[in-house]
Length: 245
Ligand SMILES: N[C@@H](CCC(=O)N[C@@H](CS)C(=O)NCC(=O)O)C(=O)O
Image (cartoon, rainbow, N blue to C red; front, side, top):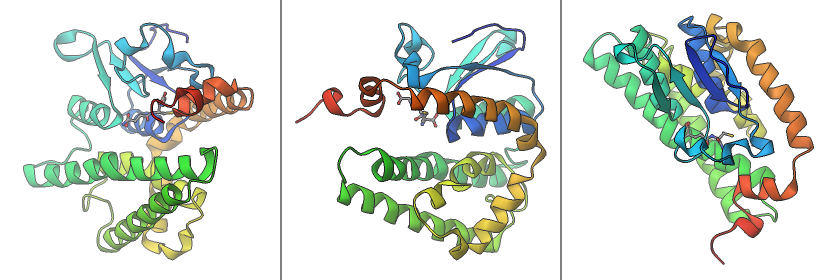
């Protein structure tokens, strides 16, 4: 894990939608940042002291060396990082209390439902050692309900919180861009969602960070292909790492 601080913002990350959210935001608000690649498929998030960055040893984590009062400030949890950056820059959070409330509702729905449902759906679809039919079907069913909900919403409004692009779109795009297809959901059934994915995918903020994210993907895919099976069990919380019978 390389840590040099040439930029004033450091992002601890790896290839995952939750990290892409933060990179996308930094690209949108045009803040320079340095990525500290945490090699999760080599177990770097389990290293001594990593819980000082994130108490649950997860990514992303952001460290702003120009934080409030000019002091360094650390933020974990992708939703909290987006709100922090929106407040820091005065961008993408809504201009009045009603707009801001709308942005927060769609942001919270992503954090509490879209991420966990598509994340667990992908886990039970691809990573469960034996076919856990109940869990796989449950999470894919929830994912389909979410696709229906977002398709209906995006049939009424241009962006998730209404007329304006916001951190709710930034948070949701990395999850609804490819994960429905990865779960075998037919994206053509959701034309409004497809329209939004196509539009958000062209955002300048995403273009700005595209190469930096691709670099994480290249290294993590190679690490994943060579990963130690016991480390994968630890990472996924299974095998000898199960804590219950
Ligand atoms: N709620 C967290 C989720 C973060 C998360 O699950 N990150 C994964 C990305 S791979 C991770 O760090 N996993 C490592 C682990 O669970 O050991 C957020 O939105 O930031």
